[in-house]
Image (cartoon, rainbow, N blue to C red):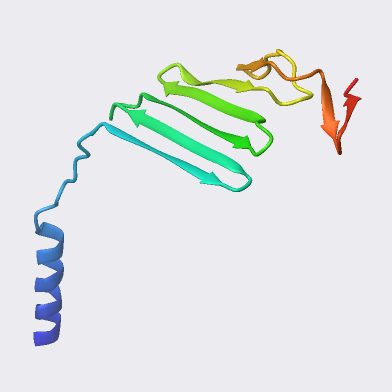
Length: 118
């Protein structure tokens, strides 16, 4: 009988206890990095206002100077990106709401020779 009383008391305390509420306080942030290696470099930077708006960029440059750089914004209008590159085989053609800016050749490079992608 004492066990039932104690169990009931514990359950009562658990049910009637104060409920902690956790509120998320939005906080802006800003970060970035750049890494240089023997085969190229990588980089990223991003900042957010703490209320759902984020903008940033990331990219890669190889040892031959080929670059791909992505700039993006994410906010109440969705995710939008622009790709800047000099990669061979790329053209200025936007798809899937992504803007591509290319100054690369219209063919692709393979083992020292160019081949057309068409």
